[in-house]
Image 1 (tube, rainbow, N blue to C red):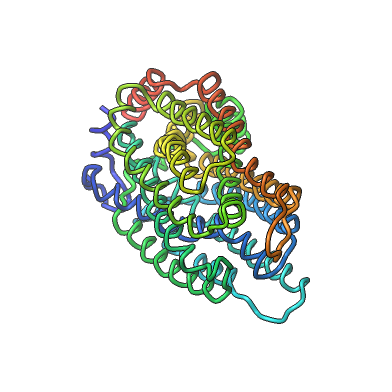
Image 2 (image 1 turned 90 degrees about the horizontal axis):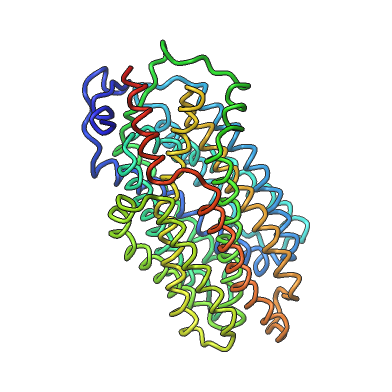
Length: 468
């Protein structure tokens, strides 16, 4: 019923005519959106800290504090932008798609500026420059990412098709990750040391690719679910807040996502130091990036049949448990070579890759649940709250990551790190992810309420209500 309904719904961009059915174009369009996002997001997540410590020669704890402040500000920007979009009427080109196109160029320009190094300046200048450019980039990222993420809930109403969008979004992210994590170390490092000019070159290349991807996302996607403005309940901030407070799926998913994002970002930060210093082989990060993407592509064909049979909650929790067990094993094997470590790690990356393939479909279900509770279709607001949780996770991870690297005794610019520092880096890269992923597993299994049966019922109830 839901699938038939979403194909016939009137939309502003087709002047009341029946839109084309959900299909490959939508999946590719949504893939390109995160492909574009993650050209810079993954570059920043994986390599900006080492750029700041080894090119700007900033203290890692100071960098961690910068990340904390910037991500907390970004969380505010997400909510503000999401609420702003929900107060706008849909145009002939949709409600969310136009913003992706409008803001893509300013976003990419700000990203390139982050990696500009002016030689001979003071430490204070470099720190101030880092603050200004990084915070501007993060703010502009919200103006593209919030409409992009919100758009999934209006492309289709079908739960399985939404899972497909989530999977294709993850493919886009992993394609960007594959390029950056494999090609990045080869471009950025010269003789196992960072090179400022190479960082700028990489930013220019990835920025150009990002803009091309945003254009493809805009061209290939269709917004199908559009609320009738004449019958739409009047928006009320109080009603929205009350509905959000009653939305148990949202609350528990926010907590799980917060923990997951902290550990995911921490892994990305610490892995650079793990391979550069502990294993003495920064370019081995290329193999990690390659296998991380390969693990996701192996899991991709399994997602649809697994979700159709067991449900999103059940599949996601299984993947997280597998990853937690692998990181536990790695902690107790400190004498592995880089190659052996990567071989075992690949199994763990498959586990949280499964989780990432379905995670965005959780958000669309939560948006539906908000509509079920309140009668309000507030895609931007609900998605921005989820994005806010991710930003807070990034803030905590950035702060904790920088502080943790400093706490284990890392010395920027040193020819070699002490044995105690190397042991600390290894623990940060294994034990902390193991414990954190176990917490995520427990939350999803025991506290998140939307299992397969309840999600299907929710879809049917909303379809009946919209038809009425």
